[in-house]
Every structure is written in structure tokens, then in C-alpha cells.
Image (tube, rainbow, N blue to C red; front, side, top):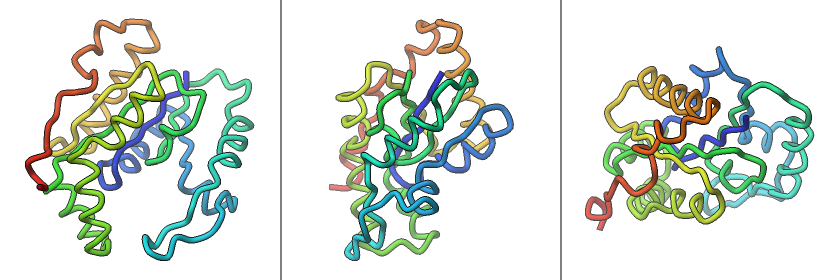
Length: 181
């Protein structure tokens, strides 16, 4: 089974993946983009690399071919990639997200951009347009360990075909639009 773990930067993807790495194979696509040069250059305005999505998809396909273990593809672009059996979108209240990003020394414009993206459900909407099985996990107040336990539980139910057990994590439970505008 292949699970994409996505969300706005600062929602906990890397921390949760690190915890789950004791049980699952984790593929960190941001690291792949950087370490393997899977980008087309730098976006100076945003201070980030521009991912070469075609090259990234090709490399990911190579890495997962023939695998029989559960794999988590972690990164805020993972929902753009094909081949996932389900996508889990991590969600965080915009105000809390801003605090987390400020602690990482994000530029003020980048903090605002990510707050707005979270308030408008940008990643969630993109994900639901591309994937059939999409679930939301809120990480505003839970510890990384508790959020990892919840993600692990969702993966376990999906692996067992117990889809009714994860219905409460279907998209559309959060509306934070008033927090930014």
C-alpha cells in the first residue's frame, strides 16, 4: 500500500513521518528533489526549488516498483504524484501554522501565503480533485506522537479494507476561512 502524506508546510508531515519510520518505509520527496537534483531551478521570490514533477514521478515509480511493504510518500507535493492508494492531508489552524512557520524563520510573505492556503483548503481541494481516497487529520493541538498514532490507525484500517472505520476522517470537517480574512 502506498500512502501520500501531504499538507501545508508546518502541519507536521516530517515529524509524523519520522515517528512512523519505525514501522513504514518513508520516502521524503523534498529530500529527493534536493539530493537528486529533481528540480528545474530556484524560485527566488519564494526561496525554494521548483520541483521537476515529471522527473520526481519517474524516480518515485522506480523506488516503489515491486515493493510489498507499506510506503508513506511524505511532502507537501506528494498529492500531485500518481500511484497512491490513499492520501492523508494534515491540517492545522492558520494561526498556529503561522507560529510554527515563524519559528522556522519563514519570510513574512511566505507565512501569509501558507496561512491563506490552509484557510482556503488549497491542498485538500487539489487532493480531492486528483484522488479517490482522501482523509484529513487535524494536528493543531495533538502531539506529534498522537497524530502519528492516528495516521497509523487510518493506514491500518485502509490496509484491512475497513473503510467505514475511517469515514470520520473524510474531507470537509474544517473551516478556518475566517481566521485569515
